[in-house]
Amino acid sequence: MHDLRVIPDSVWWAEPTATFPTFEGEMDAEVLIVGGGITGICLAYTLADQGASVALLDAGPLAGGASGRNAGFLMVAPAEPYNEQIALWGRPGAKAVLECGRRSHQRVRALIEAHGIACDYRANGSLRLTRTEEEAEDIRASLAALKSDGFPMLELPLSHAVPPHAVERFTASFVTLEDGELHPVWFLHALAAEAGRKGARLFGGSAVTGAAWRGGVWEARTERGIARARTLVLATNAWTPRLCPALTPLIAPRRGQMVATAPLAREVAPRPTYAHWGYHYWRQTADGRLLMGGWRELDPDGETGFDAVTTEPIQAAIERGLSELVPEGTTIERRWAGIMAFARDGRPLVGWLDAEHHLALCGGYTGHGLAMAPACALDLADLLAWRKAPGISTFDPSRFAELRQARDGVTALGVAAE
Ligand SMILES: Cc1cc2nc3c(=O)[nH]c(=O)nc-3n(C[C@H](O)[C@H](O)[C@H](O)COP(=O)(O)OP(=O)(O)OC[C@H]3O[C@@H](n4cnc5c(N)ncnc54)[C@H](O)[C@@H]3O)c2cc1C
Image 1 (tube, rainbow, N blue to C red):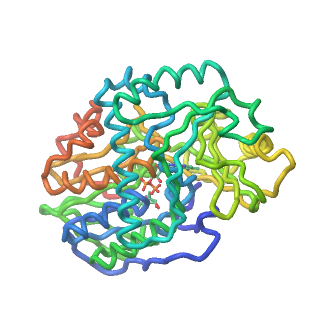
Image 2 (image 1 turned 180 degrees about the vertical axis):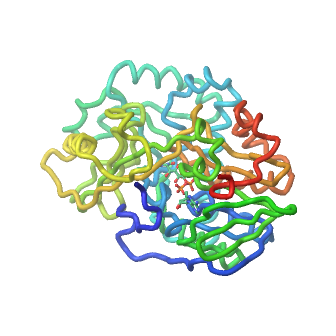
């Protein structure tokens, strides 16, 4: 089982980083955020910056969930070809996802610049490599729609995208120039500290066991304290159904595994790269390490649940992927796993879960949250202040009939609901 209290073994925790106090006693806030990954931290920063009184409680170290175990890609487009997205969601729905990706990246860059955050941020674009002609044709078929919607993706000769010895492994390559990458934990811990300077109160090691709406206020309990707030936001991603079981059919925990090598002497991955429909991904960090992960398509039933452990078959597949890029071999220094929240329809759930009882939700990014959460959090802050938030209108959780039916009231969460 995923112990939320442990420090992750991902490459992003190789060096000591910030720590945040445990919550004890009682506190009052206007907004209480449960969950301190990229969603919770971006929202805490945004609300504090707007002058709201905000508190955040995380079960473990801040950014210890998926946010501190990912690949650090900031990619505007999700893995699925754009034409597929249009077929599913119509042009406005498909474009809303791209706009969310672009606004998230812009928000991240603006925060890095405003606060001088050192987080190895680079914006050199990203690559998509295909392993079959069918996949290449699917991506080519989307290029015109992407261009006309203002999100150009360009086909590149393979020889410009991968080292010469790897060219034969792929059928085509495409570049998105606006994409980027960063060190997620350095970024998030610095942003959390900035939120603190703006008055937000952020706590780690403080799991919320239950919460109840009493007399117009949410009262949330941790092992050692009680926090009260008029508005409560669930930023607990894969773990959200544990506090709100009505979400169990809609948000499923899915595992992603990665490795990090020792620094390589040469560049083999000039840009963050997706291959094989995004199931395989890699990048090279500023110090030359190759980070590679994915291959969950080999065992979709096994790569599910809350166990953040690595498994031999997936790790072996990642190692075969490594040998495509580094045939001479290299040392793997770290292996890790993280738990993502996959939404039933593949789109995030952002908005009111129960507006009457001031309960909101932000999560379910289906493996793409680093690149979506910052804009979702910005827009959610508007919604919490009863302002319009068109950027997230197509992510409204009420698109699911189950939640519309539950709308007559979610007034208890976790143990308080049992
Ligand atoms: C291996 C891997 C690679 C990935 N690569 C990328 C990538 O390159 N680009 C990209 O865009 N996305 C990527 N993702 C997905 C991305 O990391 C997530 O979508 C994103 O981090 C979700 O952020 P979050 O804040 O919503 O959730 P999380 O970061 O999971 O945070 C949820 C937090 O809630 C806390 N919590 C849970 N229950 C409670 C409770 N009861 N009380 C208090 N706190 C609680 C947890 O401790 C946790 O810190 C990857 C994910 C994985 C696993």
